[in-house]
Image (cartoon, rainbow, N blue to C red; front, side):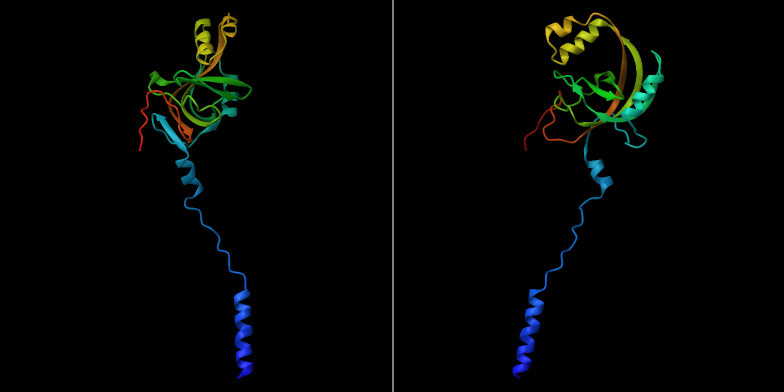
Amino acid sequence: MKRFITGVFALTLLVGCKEPKQEEEMPAVNDEQVQEMAYMDYGAEFSNSDVIDAMELGTMYKTMKVGDTTTVKVKGTIADVCVKKGCWIKMPVGDASATVKFKDYGFFLPKNGKGKEVILSGKAYKNITPVEELRHYAEDAGKSEEEIAAITEEEVTLSFIADGAMVEEFDNPDVEGVEKTEE
């Protein structure tokens, strides 16, 4: 009987000292669902399929002439934004930057969206931007009086008219014309 009790005790020690099995955690959502949830929509709704990279759009701009237009969906980063209303953004495209406006001023992007990822649907084109408009953009961007006065010549601009945009989701987006509600 002593041997039986000693055997049960030894077996209990072995089982009790064994490391518990670690179960692998399952994510609540898959990668596609995370991507869908990670954007805030502005303007017209569109799917984020057939999207090209901003660097590829930069290559397309190089082959365009003033007045050429192409319809495209592009993914890039907001490099600059109108600090007054969010009525335009700048997006790097290759070794240049495109000025993005929003169709019929129908929507604006967050004024604090600088550095956020953006997917745009619309038309890319090259045009000539007059001095007054260039100065207006410089003023909206918060440039100094000296910087604004230094703008004396029109320039060929890489432009984009977006009819819809998806911006990487972040806390407290500051969007003109959108009322904030408290819960």
